[in-house]
Image 1 (cartoon, one colour):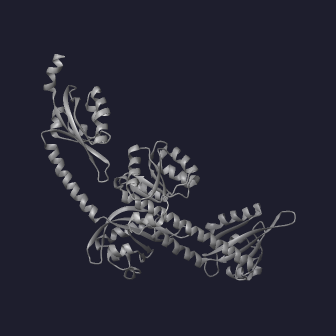
Image 2 (spheres, one colour):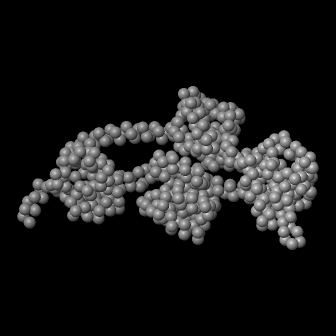
Image 3 (cartoon, rainbow, N blue to C red):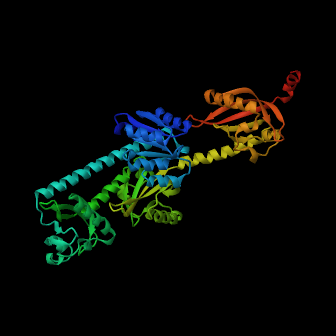
Length: 526
């Protein structure tokens, strides 16, 4: 399904999109990409974190596209503010500089729904990312509703039935048992009599005692009812998870005299949640090949895109080692990646090679992330593989073409230069350098206005650059350029603007004609 089709199917109404970027050109680029796509969207713009926060506090948005560079902080800082309470439910797509994998991994850990490098922004990529984020957000909301419904059902069940198979106890405010039913005592490997007088935290693993103790103190102090989950030191399995309801019992004077606790073994349900978590990781996207593995590197899930990319059906792949799709000379690399992810690291856009069923190699970009259970423990790994074979082929062809063109460009006897949209020199011909007395390393990256007289600088800023951006060309503009030895020459500049595949300005190509000799009689006459 295409990104546009997915958006149409998932969102019958208009998508409310907020674009946050202090750069007018970059922000307009995102707005145009959305506008040029068939996505049905209402786009709002913000140029700073402060402006964005004000909008988010007063309006609801379906998705936020956020640049990392802002005038009043970084996008990562703003993302933290959104997650901390300004708009924690709104999915955020972070836009980063090309190759900024470390920042991408950081913002994904901080709660970003996705990230897109600026170098690869396109209407299709952006539409797909927005669709995926909104779909994932809606899925999470649905999962939350299911969880709330489950909690309500559990509460109703306990109120209706005194289930003697549950763990039931009474503890004093100091958390010593005054009563434990047979089920609870047997769970701990003791008799009910042996439980009396002992502290309930003795039967909680050491790494959870502080949290459970704090919860019990809140129940006592607030005379409240609280629910929670923790592992217990079971006689047969010292790690089973129990769901508890703790209720303060208050006497006629309003004092808490005991805390009544009812617990239910939910270890199997926790395993079910782990399955839901795995499913949620898999359905983040259906356009790319998505595979999940367990801690033994065995394939646990295999989506249809993986079938198309690698040629193995899900039936053939599930249960096999992930080495099924890894070339022999890349298996050491795979072990290194697995070690990093098992350490909690997310790996984004790692370029490598995989092998198809027909033994042909395919170049892919991998995004790997750990899959965690309800307690935060890693129990699997999610891998998203994108086929980049065609992109790599085009990149190689482009590099070769650019190298050839650059050699031809630099060797031409004419005065030539190219600039980016900000006026910074990207390339100059040898004749340009010889005529002005510079070497290439002295000029590349500097602004063209540094090589013209003050009067001509105004012409560059008010005539040349605006004309290029507006019409795509400027013709025979008279300028005065300053040579390395501080002498000046008169030139006549003509330039055209080149655009990238998305239609946005990329660079200008200019040719300069030295007209110093032809202008001299006019100046002498003046």
